[in-house]
Length: 315
Image (tube, rainbow, N blue to C red; front, top):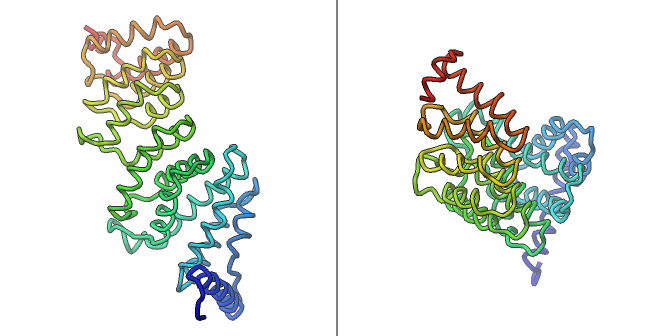
């Protein structure tokens, strides 16, 4: 139509897409799911999300032109992203979105195997989230980081993200680790987890983690970093340092990380002795319990259950 704006043409095109979708479904005798209804269903507490994901994936795979689907999906997602409170219905939708994106790789697993699989919807969604991350709204910034965290965490190893987009995600999440809102910083820390390279001394994510774990004023942010940071020559001293954190919950997690992720032989004898002395004399009973039941037990298991062998590691 002459003089018609691009957005108007796109809306008209999408309306046509919706009509064509219904006609094709009727001809085949199949039910193709309406995106709005899917988002409504995804909020329900006892909804079978796996079934809902499969139904929407079927609809998606039937479409030749997927652009309108992408736009409509993000349109309804925006309603969820303006809610900051951790309402169960909202959390259900966030989880559903991550599961749906992951499901789009399932049908290609057998053919792809180790080969990287590209997903245009994934690129579209990440581009939208990156553009939204500097929003003035605390809720939007929180939900952007949460979604990136959930989606990255659920993607298969062979998922392909364009290099430029990957760098944009990395940069955006690093910026959000400096956000004024602790809950946003926590989600940004979690989102960066899969982007770290512990073998690279110059990895920007590892550098951010090493800084936050010591300097962030919020104990939950420091705990988030502890839960994500990969032990390495560079990060080990930072992890050990948190066993002296002012917050009991951080000290507990630090000892748990040392018990679960760090081999006793990577520690010097002086470090082993100090960790035990410090932990067994901690002012918190729950920290002492973690040291006794998890750290000591882990070290004993590595010594083959031989107490004398364990003592040898401490002398």
